[in-house]
Length: 319
Image 1 (tube, rainbow, N blue to C red):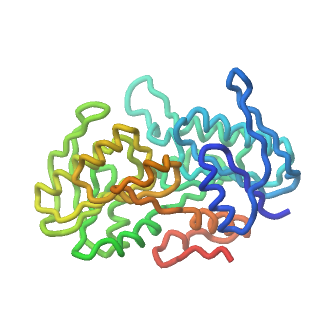
Image 2 (cartoon, rainbow, N blue to C red):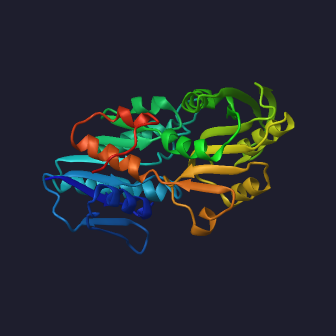
Image 3 (spheres, rainbow, N blue to C red):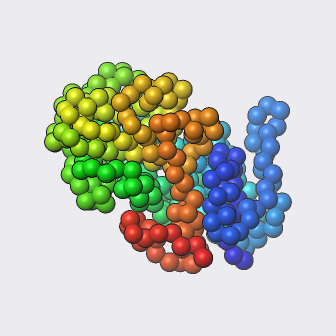
């Protein structure tokens, strides 16, 4: 049997767009809740011997969406699917990837164990918070990047000299990748976290005067780091400040922080669902990664390389 696509309830719009890109319908699966909240799943399509792809980002609410994905995986395994790939456009719990304080969990590893135990034989994901999470799995992991999709838009949006800026030391590697794609300079903002919601940007390394700047990050929830970094860039003479973020998980307070900030535009993807009212925010530009994920699914199914999808000039081809 060929590719069989199924969607959880976390981001059905993205799942539909992926199916459209592949020219294949989403499979039929009934997902419901018992009165006390337990998840119930039943595949109404026959998937015995099929190559099954289950699309479910573990975004907010993460516990609910993760449990639903685990049950979808278990049901597919018990229905004798030949190959089961968990497609997580956004991998929740990725920020808890190390034991940096006493008596804390490594939740990213726990989630990896749960996915494999439930039945995932392969994982397709995008822009993990930390690269080492791939090593937490004992099954193959295909790790995609949203950068080629975002950079194509940024090239059109900016018309002056550009500098890519890492908003903190943890984003240096990602910023370097964007700078290489945009063939431009690089800068770094050092930050100091005051508390869980407040960040202070203290130092800038690099010349940004009179230039458009692009702050890059994999994830934002409060927009505090981005807003503080943008203010520091403006203080040092930057022209316009854009932000390129793979996963936009902004809270209500985060959206307000974005509106109040000096960021011209936050460019992101549809890896996690956004309320239609939020998606239409004048400072937010949402680009679809459906073509990227569809091409990856197609290549995995045909046992072909996905590495060419990392390059800017490699446009998805799903014919």
